[in-house]
Every structure is written in structure tokens, then in C-alpha cells.
Length: 351
Image (tube, rainbow, N blue to C red; front, side, top):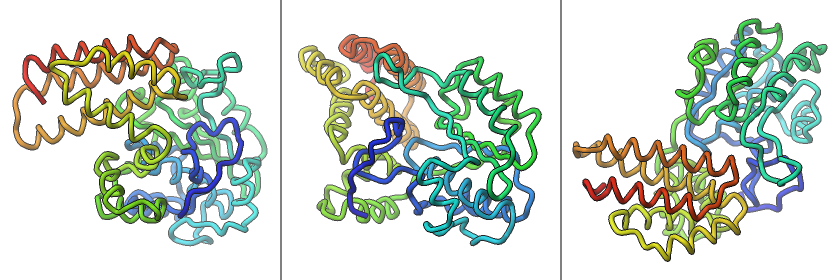
């Protein structure tokens, strides 16, 4: 599929520029096991009241959630629709979901801060409390109401507790779809009240197939490099292919490769660049954490010792960049802090 111009919805923070939003996508790649499990539950007439859809960013969690929602809103929990949960694009429910106008679908995610124009740091309790009114309304077409929380990881403590109350008393003909990149961070009581749908990174063959479809004009060697950097995530690959994504990923790799002796001037320059880019600090932090994870996994497979300190470092980097992004802190200091921490660990043993 070729790149396309993006619509102007201001709240599509999860849209990759130039590519379809998950609600617009009819293709779910490489997640046949999770899709089949969801289909069996929906078409049996006895689906759970809540699914926890988990997996790394960009591998199709939102795409699967919208696919489930479209099916329920079009056919209900019946076997009237296709086994793969597809819904024709001209179906009234599908058209309404595409237009963000279906009365039976609610999307909860971090809102834009009207003062800064940036995403809020958390998904607040006020957003989660909208579920009570939504599920209390008369059922829409098809008799079902579906709410997607994207992502549950963004909830603060009050929001998580409010969601838990909703899970304890699930309404009839209602489904809650929680998306999570790191489900281990959710309250155990939330996890225990949801059925799990775990999505896996795509293998190299599927990544190459997907990138050939989305980036047909890119050289095959460049697509192969994207697939390697993306770690099985088509979303990450498309992000790398647009804007400054590829450059930031290379900067993250360079920081790790020169962890023992970081270049202070280059880091200051990088910090200035991240300040100018929209979501630059958040993107760089994600690439840095993912690159560290890839190297840790590779070393673990080879039986290398001393990985505990690298695992702890990876956690600190995720936490540090997450906090800096949420509080809109100065990127240079965040990058310098990560580099110094990395240098201390690297000097005790390389990765």
C-alpha cells in the first residue's frame, strides 16, 4: 500500500504520518493466533467482558481492537459475520467507525494539553470515568457498546482504580479492550479480570512482505535494514521510514556503541535536535530502550554474563525518558544523564 496523505484529526496521536490509522486498516499481519482466539469467543456468543491486548508497540494491537469492535458493532456476538472478523468497508458500522461517529464505540487515550499542544502525561481518572456514562447508555446498533483504552499503561493510580471498579461489575452487551505495551505494570487485579490476547513481533518474512506493500518504492536492501532495526514491529519500521525516525534510531545505536566514551559535543547537538523535533525526545528514548533490549536479548542467547546491570540500565532509561517526556524536561540533560549512566555500566563490561 502506498503512502497517503493523512487527514487532519488533531487527536490521532497514534497515526504514523502518511499511513492509514489503525481504525482504517483492514489488514492484521502475523497475528493469526490472537485473531482466531478472539473470533472463537465472539462468534460463540460468549465473549469476555474485557480483553487485555498486549505486545510491543506497533505490532497491531490497535488494529486488532478496531477489528473486534467493528465486528461486534456490525454483527454482535454471533457467527453471522466472517470467521476472520472482517467487516465490509461499506457496512454502516464500518463507515461510522471510520468516521469516528459510531455511538457504540468509545476511544479513551491521553488528550492534548490545550496550553502546550502536547499529549498529557497520563490517561486521567476523568477520562476513565466516562466509561460509566457510556456503558450506561442504551446499546447502539447491533446491541453492543465497545470501549478501547489506548493504552492502559498511561493510566495514573486513580484512573486504574476507577477502571478496576468497572471491571468488577461489567455491564451486559459491553466490551472493554485494553491495549498495553507493558502489561506487567498494570494492577494484578486488572490483569486477572481480563482475557489475554498476546501479540508477537513479526518474523522477518512477514516484515519484508509488509514493507514491500507499504514502501514499494524503497530499495529492498533498505527495507531489509528497516526490518532489522524495527524488531518485528511494522509500526516501528514505518516510523523509521518517515521523518527523522531513521536518523534517531542510528543516533541511539551510536550512543550504545560508544557507551564507554560518549562524545559530549555530539550529545549536546543531539539534545538540541530533539528539542526541535515534535516528539523527538520520546522517539529517541523508545529507540534507545529498544536497541538496548535487542542487544541484551542477543547476549543472553549466547550465555554472556553480567547482563543484570544492563537490564537495570534499560529500565532506568525507559523511566527517565518517560518522566522527561511527561514533564516536558530539557532534552539535553536527559540525553546526558542517560549517556553518563550508560558509560558507568559499560566501563564495568561491554554489551
